[in-house]
Picture 1 (cartoon, helix red, strand yellow):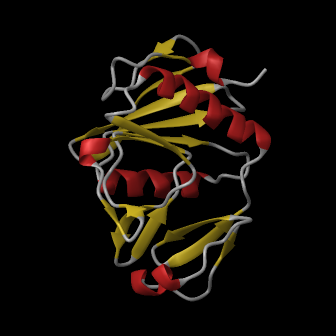
Picture 2 (picture 1 turned 45 degrees about the horizontal axis):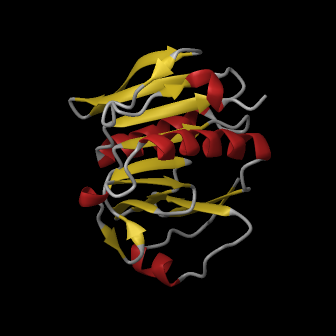
Length: 183
């Protein structure tokens, strides 16, 4: 992961060219460049997106995977690219081509290179943004950690290896945990 030396403002960032061979997030004004996800990571995200898309009404709900920017704050600039996010279409706010409203569910899939500090910073950003639910998936441990926003803080409420999980904001959707992991 590479971090830029110069802090960028929101206005400067809007004029920068898009990067096609890497993923870039902006954390407190610093551009953080990451390699694209590996196949197993993408397989987990795709499997979960397919499960949710089959069960949620596309006229009301938008399931997005790693192809969008989520502007959490303009100053200092924080822009994240969650692995998966689920939005209610009537609550989506877009400006300058980026999402500006908190998704109802954010999913992050851990990679071996992720540090505890990076994970904690992302969760703080999602907490500050008001995301009501975050799932952190670990392909290595084959677990789903469920965090819910309570009094402005994301709190871990369960870590699951099997069984069924329903997103708190979309109880009509049921995720069979073991079906998400590639063989």
